[in-house]
Length: 132
Image (tube, rainbow, N blue to C red; front, side):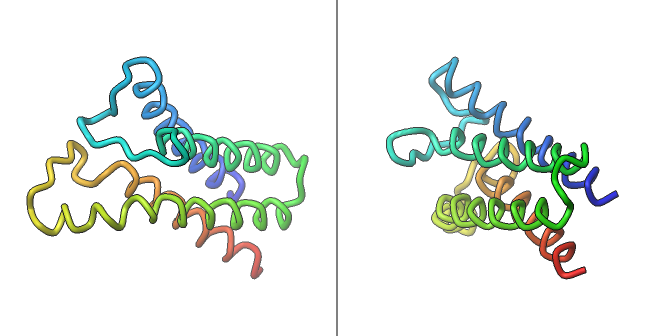
């Protein structure tokens, strides 16, 4: 059950970040009419896609029993921790916009915040599994 949950969380994150990345790549605009944060000269969604791709691959390997669950959980914990740092870096400045009431986010929150939520959930589940 744990492996399937991690697989589907990784898949959902991959699809979401993949959508954001494809909109930016093919339309040169950010999805949902948001500002597009950049990191090292590239859109942040590209890095989010890379992190979720790693999570997806690790979870898939765990689901297929190619990697022991304990190793899979440790890898997912580390990658999701990096994702929290990354998405948090972009989400925190946007909290002021949310609190000011001047935000116009189509999804209610900035897309980086949704990535952050996914990373937090993955980290919590991975740590709980490692402690078993």
